[in-house]
Amino acid sequence: MAETLAPVPGFAPGNGRRPCAASSGLQAAFEALQAGGHRPVWQPSGGIRAHVPGRVDRHPSLSVWESNGRVHFKDHAGILMEEQIRAALGFPAAEASPGPSGGGGRREVAAYSYEDESGQALFEVVRFEPKAFRQRRWVGGQAVWGLGDVRRVLFRLPRVIAAVQRGQPVYVCEGEKDALALEVAGAAATCNPGGAGKWRPEYSEFLRGADVIIVADRDEPGARHADAVQASLSGVAASVRVVQAREGKDAADHLAAGCGLEDFEPARFSLSCFSYIEKNEKQEKQERRQFRMTPLCELLQEPPEDLSWVVDAMLPASGLSMLAAKPKVGKSTLARNLALCVARGEDFLGRGVAAGAVLYFALEEKRGEVAAHFQRMGGSDENILVHVGSAPEDALREFADLLRAHRPALAIVDPVLKMVRLRDASDYAEVSAKLEPLLDLARETGAHILVTHHLGKNDRGDGDAVLGSTALFGAVDTLIELRKRDQGRVAKSLQRYGTDLAETVASLDEDTGIVSAAGDLRELQIHAAMDKVRDALAGGQLTQKEARDLVEGSTALTTVALNRLLESGEVSRTGTGRKGDPFLYALAQSPDLSPLSGDPDAWSVLE
Image (tube, rainbow, N blue to C red):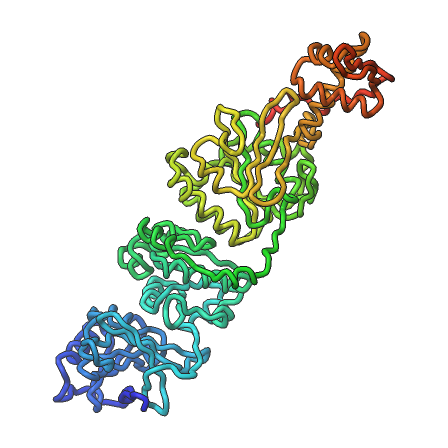
């Protein structure tokens, strides 16, 4: 059988005389109302009627009565809630005796009414001390615990609707206490019943076209709740931003500390990554230890991952890559070329590109230099958003919000250390912790994130040349190395997925600042060796050893060059190659020279 409560007292006429049975609590309420000029009148039922604090109505609309040893206040106009009235009269918020919840010695301290669009009461959320919440609905004039199939709506719905119609911003917080505190401060505010994690898609329709400010509690449930509300309002509200209290945990704490509506701070967590920056390290480590085991038979039945690419077989969508070079070699130049190629859907270093929006963060260059390079490359109205300058204090959070809002195909961070603020790039644990949110963000948003970094002094391969901890190379899906060689700038990639880019000469057009693939480095080296062999054979026939001695550089390349010339028919060969009868090579026809592309010194004008 449903648990029922006594009906809420009605509003009966009175004679103004104090009832003999009035309690000290009711007497205190009467005196507080009288001292405030709210014209209280005693009712025959033992309660009080009066004008609501802060409002002069034609007819008094405040009822005060006592139930279960507790004094209750109700604004029949539905404008002020009980906590607001108590605060105005100086009544303690927790003035109560054992409430209807019974067990645990809890006391009812507040009842929050939820009304429909017309102001008709649907249900109440009741707060108890020690802190707990229960919900009750009205059935035949009786209060019944539980909501059953009653319609769920936003708190203070009539006021929210009026605020949206007026174009007034609406604050969305986690609980009723916060919403009422914001109302007292002059804002239109609301929340959903049930608290964090209970937002429903239908609530967003009440805020269609509104400017919404979400006040997130300073804890992980608050961060997750704010993210869920923000996602639900995306494309529904006119604008959505997330803030948090400057002081304390929530909106009520913030206002109680003397801060105003204008003092809320941007939320200090990465919503898109669900990575709350202020979580303690112990909790993070515990979460990482939560293994999720899958039986092999189920794993083998899972469909293959649909791997898509921003740059064909090089930069995967939802991936993280690093472009590394020594200082002044041209990594920023190459990064801006990549940005323009993706925005235009044009090939990058000889590989196909899927066109899409680009976010480019130039964190250590001058604004004029960045603009001048894009202008030289012919940039105009491509879908590229550019930030030039230092990273803000909450760089990771703002970066996450921008990726979630714009959903780019590519985001470039130049350089990565300016974004994640590593104290020690050689500390494996710190590097891993700082880069992990970037990888999580790429996986969550579908964007490819490319970061730039420096190579060390050595020329070691396989990622060991990246300056700092090996965790820098280990964290990324793709490493692109850019180096300075005799032939010009040379790029290569090491891939976790896709196909490694062999060492490729990247030729820079000095006039336009555009980088293009001039060819495979080894092939260009072989062609250069072929030219040298032709020059050497112009003086007459030579043995292979004589040719190698005359041609500077790799003997292996000279051997390959001779064989290529022989196969093409440009060089003829006589002799058996045996002792006493060595092979003799001679020019068979005039060579068709193919000079190398690119000016090795052109990169010096850009970084």
